[in-house]
Length: 243
Image (cartoon, rainbow, N blue to C red; front, top):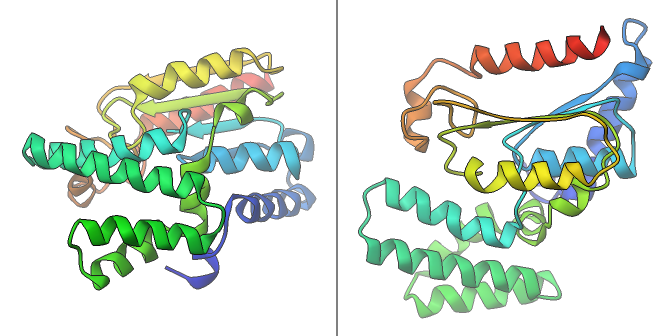
């Protein structure tokens, strides 16, 4: 992972997105008043923050956006992936407990040093090696990961004031539609936006690709970057707004 990206928190990512949108609006072929943003997964939080704090978009398209608190979502994500991989219930339950403790440590710690200290203690109690902890820390304790764990997405969605189009994949095991679709719908209905659409598309994974189970290994088995139905629905929704 690039050092600059690994050190970027949600504030930094939102400012970067805002800079990109401002640049786009300056192009002569772009109607600045009709320029929106499409974001995926955790990017839904970043896009919402960008719109509310830095640069307004005329609409938002959110694909598989997290709508439940990150510290609740993280343990479920890892437990579900492990379960689908065929691990016994005892292993799944143990992993869920460990991830819950890690999420709580990140959520409640006052600074980065305390996070590292508390998570290292969790790994030490599990008998993990220093190398195993270091590998985890480099991939899962980045600035954006910490913001993800601490996030309360509905507070951002409740403050949106532009049309929002939301799509989930039915087989998403990372951001489960059965937990998130209703949650974001409820939050957006309390917002100032007059146009909210939330849909779940059958047989798609977290990355909006055709999938039977949603497990990560299926990504390598498909040539589809993003399913055509997703692009068609997004395009149709945007075009209807222009009629």
